[in-house]
Amino acid sequence: MNSLLKFITCGSVDDGKSTLIGHMLYDAKLLFADQEQALELDSQMGSRGGAIDYSLLLDGLMAEREQGITIDVAYRYFTTEKRSFIVADTPGHEEYTRNMAVGASFADLAIILVDATHGVLVQTRRHTRICSMMGIQHFIFAVNKMDLIDFDENRFDKIARDIRQMMSEYDFASMKILPVSATEGDNITLKSDRMPWYRGTSLLTYLENINVATEEDDYAFTMPVQRVCRPDRTFRGFQGQIETGAIRIGDEITTLPSNEKAVVSRIIDAGRDVEASDRGHAVTISLDREVDVSRGCVLVKDTAPYVGTLFTAKLLWMDDTPLVAGKNYYLKLGTKMIPAVVMNISHKIDVNTGNEIPADTTYKNEIVQCDISVSDKIVYEKFKNNQALGSLILIDRVTNMTSACGVVLHSLRRSDNLTWQKLDVTREFRANQKGQTPATIWMTGLSGSGKSTVANALEKRLVSLGKHTMMLDGDNIRMGLNKNLGFKEADRIENIRRISEVSKLMNDAGLITITSFISPYQRDRRTARDIIGNESFLEVYISTPLEECERRDIKGLYRKARAGQIPNFTGISSPYEAPEHADVTVDTTNMSVDECVDKIIEALEARFGK
Image (cartoon, rainbow, N blue to C red; front, side, top):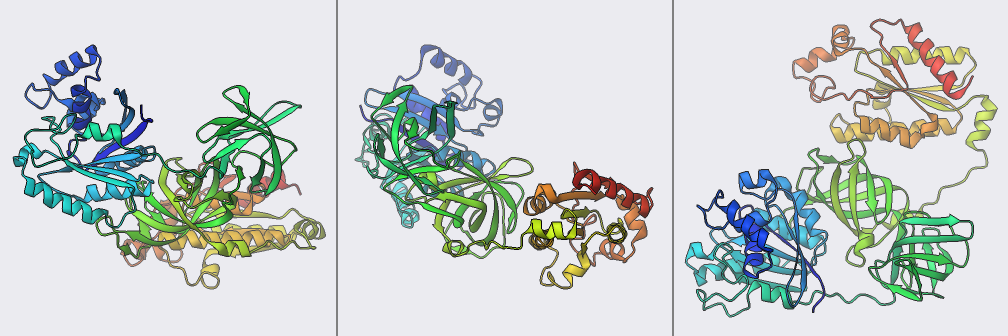
């Protein structure tokens, strides 16, 4: 028997993906008796006038059956005399592209269906590009619904030419194009006598015999560490799945990113001691000496993946919220989860032509190339060299939704030439010299809420108490340091990032920094907290309502915004996301300035001392 084959069915909506797999299972007698009876009964109320609706075998959700479409990924395991299979039947609708990408991430082979009456469509091209991006090297194009075009050879040949032209830009190991009828069963499990001009094998026969094994480097061992196991003081082991290569007792390995070397003293595989283990096995490895290893580190032998903080990646954007440069996410790569920021967007990739399109914003289901920076050194590799260390996802830090999946294209070496310079005059020395605890008081609120007034009064109070301060006001900063930034989302994100870095430098100088910025987005304030450090960050929400701010309209900005003269104005044409858990909340509607300052000073003393 050949090895297990994991494959995906994809393509445009209503191309017959579920029907094709369902018919294959039915004709090959791979169903239990009760499943067959249930299918025949369910088909009585199906969309085929009582004839068997094979798609019902995989479309299990009620919404799928009602609409006649696939929404979620349906996994099905089956075995023939020659091979075992796991198939992921994925949706064709553009709305559910993210579900299709999940299915593609596990597969060795893709069956991409093409409707013979429509030919190659945009979604066909998108799914082909995603499959290639996910590392699939084996493709089958099933030109379906041949019965609707009277099994026309010329029409099939034209579609086959379009497919070959589309595939000319991709690297792949094998490609098969065959005509089928999913509803009638032609060329699914047996050769059809209605297409004598087709001389190839049936789909099932081809699947049973194709070899998708890859030639892995026998010597290049990599294992991302998932867990450090320490049941007692006598044992310390590193647990994870071996992604490439093999390992034996006595082998010298390198731990990354610490770059320490040690010798393997023990290997535990499936609960028992073994001399060696290889790719695909989940093992516990013990070393002959103590090394600096934790979850997210990687054990390697005879290979040298990248260790750094900057790289270029290709992403499939899956979030309803657009991507703009400067946004912060959690990046999951291997077993490592780490804060990351999309530094810039190089270009989008046209799903039809593959052409690069200049862009500064990316929307749902678009493919984009961008540079990503992470907060600390991680271990990664080009996806084409190591899929485990070259594939990633981005997770929204507020909603925890998966925003994108992607692959590493190459490293950006400029980060390797930078080294943090340690200073003899430290932050602690400057703080002791000034007799205070450095901190950043981050004031946020709508325009006209009273941020600058309260910040100014707070600074005067702190100075009168003998403190050393620096105030950063939104307008003042935009007239100098950030005068090149506008008010689009990307500019707002960069504005807050720069302010956060400046505030951190002020804190390093031993100063108490007071900032007065609208900073309307939760994620940007969270980024500011991360940059400055939670231990030094005090968020103050000036919660004055919009109606009161607009009534004051100190600068006349609300009037101009209402008249359409100021686009992207927070509270009118651009949203303000109020803090959910601010350290201090004050409302200048019913509190005097002195009362606001008293409350902030009280919070400062409770948090940082006098």
